[in-house]
Image (cartoon, rainbow, N blue to C red; front, side, top):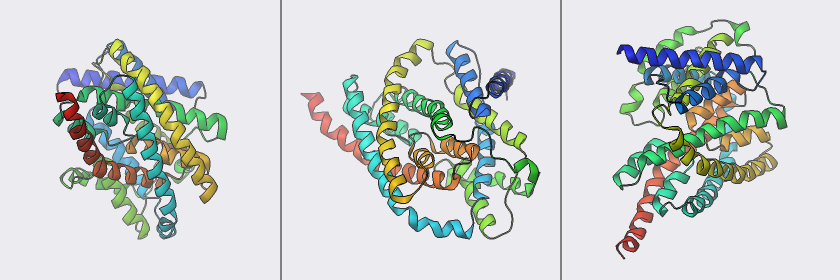
Amino acid sequence: MPRASWVAMGRALLLGVLGGTLFHLAALPLPWMLGPLVANLAASMVGARIAVPDRLRELGLGIMGLMLGGQVTTELVERLPDWSLSLLLLSAGVAVATYVVTLWYRRCGLETTAAFFSALPGGMAAMVMLGERLGIDARGIAIGQSLRVVFVLLVLPPLFWLLEGGPSAPPEGAADAGWEDTWLLLLLVVAPLGRHLLLPAPALLVPLILGAVLSASGIGSLQLPDWVMAAVLVVLGSSIGARFSGTSFWQLMAYAKYALVATLLTLAVLGVFAELIHRLLGIPRDIAMLALAPGGMAEMAVLAVALDMDPLYVTFHHLFRLVALMLVGPFIALRIDRRSAPRHRE
């Protein structure tokens, strides 16, 4: 890695530690993830050269995946059929939210296809690639989708903290357990195979699956001290904030004002369906909301682990949504594009 890349990484991680420390001292929720995110986002907006290498981010996601998989038990597997209604409500909520936000982006001046891509709550990588093929402003879609994830991460933890009294720190117990079954970290070397299998979020999903199999079979489950968890969160939070490095302040602001309204609209619609899940299935409101939240699967899984909010329920729902969007979204987008093409020719 070139020297400039090392400097950019060191700068991003140093900002992450400083931001996390300030958030921790201020007793703010999820300090070791939101602090680094805000610090690196602010640095990006003033033009600082910062970056977190993909391999380092994927290492952090892999550790989270192993910890998630370690929570799988036979009792949990027996719960899966009970989630069918929850998944149905998730699907309905995503459909309604996408329709509402597409109308909002159309009102903002975007063409129908671009508005649809920007409104989809997930599957950003696939949507950006397809958008490029259709000649749409893929960078605009990527920035809008990335801002949505950032807004969700900045809104939900404080909301849970204020309204639900949710935990604002990593779950206790990891430090007491110490380093247990750390040999499972060796499984991270096979995580890149997920790319060849075309799995979504392979850095997270492959370790999660392997960890789940080993945990359910009683072979072992990864447990790490709290300070390791905090270090992983610093890396992941910094990587999200540094994602905007190279984007000018005014360019971010141009997208942010539309993306913020779109995010709030999506949260409002999905909040209604989360309330239905709570009333019909008895799932706690904050967990139902996090399971339906329009953030990326990896980010929401990390949030669920950090806040100790039924991480497997949350991750399973985000995985279901991501796969559904990747399967259905491109077909709908292509149909919209074909229908709008004759109008453009006219």
